[in-house]
Length: 233
Image: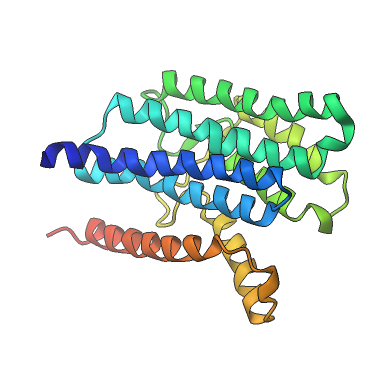
């Protein structure tokens, strides 16, 4: 029984990642892009945690890896694409639908290529932009779309799609004591703190109350893990 529970813990993180990706799509559909973005942000943190928890508990499995890829295509492929569609591409009708659909297609190709080459991959770099980073960047740009020139989002959209399936070497952050793509996460949370500081609570996305404790808890875990790694008994 204990063994079953241990095996299930990392998969629960992955399933919550998938669930938050689904919720993000729902919030995008009703025009609540702030909470849609925060849900993808939470998914990024959960994606950072599931594999490391599996290694910590020594319960890595092929099933967990495949489940993680399925969750990633929803949370970092479909959800950001839907967010970008409702925020920008919907104005172009059927053409906008087709364009937005390219993002999860390119992301799925990138994931499949990564999965078959995972054993050969280096700890120092990724081949092509990971879908998690690509989805995070697209989410970030869509989140601030109204405060930037409108041309930036579509240009970035196509560049990210191309980079995901490219053979460009992207530095890995696996050795950095922060969640993967922690810069994007920190910027999001920094913006939320700024809103609180300005006392604009009516603009505050309520899912940030889930994101902030999760982020703090994981940073604490990473610091303890790094300290133990640097000072083994």
